[in-house]
Length: 475
Image 1: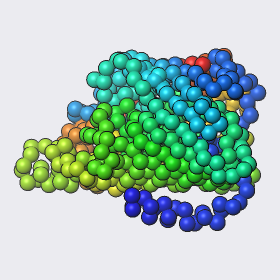
Image 2: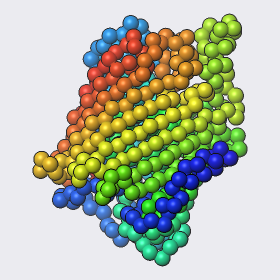
Image 3: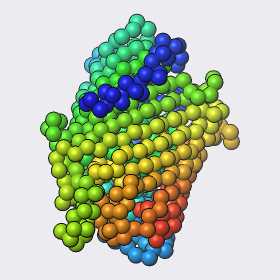
Image 4: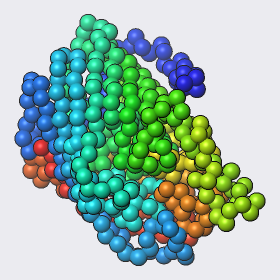
């Protein structure tokens, strides 16, 4: 807690003078997107006044790759022979507005071997190579653990309370995570329950939606942000957010998994927890153009292994192969920082940048094996070619590891995502592009393409080309 309070003070100090400036409203939603002439972007409309909300999505993503060169492979390698996989996600969102400042949200998900659901969510499909071999995996919908079973599950279950801190109101767009159409211009919001941390932290309107935008783990999210989550991507906790007309600050305390990438969470927050602090400034870096700057810090405490201890055990002859799980100790920490920028350049063109760093001493525990990352890209709305709802996007991301993390893998150690048995280290570099075609109402198709150099940070493997096709149905 002391660590995050110090970091919060550092982040907030340079911006404190901006608090009284006028400007566009700040809430948990991204900046307004370009105006779309066709409002029928769902299969059917939703009431602006009903206290009950029901909506859903169906998402199918087919991906594959041809065979690629690989001098060797290990237990956690991306398969070098050609393969093909399809993931399916069905999500049912439900919410109820009790009054103008209090609401409840329940999302259900069902997971099977080839179908996926969110809010009431059902997920299936293991993805190519069962989602190992890449730090920046190619499909954010894939559940990493193929043994979780096919039963539906509750993804989100939370209460949301708003406390008014000013007289004036601002408009708010209704959606699955909030039904309010008006909110106080200055307010305190409290959420408590089950949620995904990246529902509220590290958001980016150009690169956060895997169903209509990019699909790679380290493009849609900050790869170095090892946010508290079980293997499905959800946790239990609480979030407090203060919002004013131009800036916001949010803090979350949440449960960590008991083991790396584990399904079960540790309910003892005094022993294990994930703390997250984010400052958001909304004003843009260009005059008269919408934009957002977000600064993120996090501190995880859990039963983590240590890369250097694993290496020392191996060099001392205590083990035949470095094993991070043999060095786990309760109370270890992992901390990191992130910078997230989005900026409208012209009305149909938006750009984004994400930078991330974590200390890389203790094991990657919840998200993926990335210790440093830099991502940038852009999207263009289809109004330029008279396709108002279409969009095209291009992104490039470079991922890296700490010195001890790469040595651990080079000596034959395994993480929960990586492990070729050896490592000729090089940064993992990923190019991604998509075109989202609006077919009719809530139906979209997207051709996808990813090109990955040094998959799993290994110069002795790849490059690999991963084309794909995505179907998104929203109702």
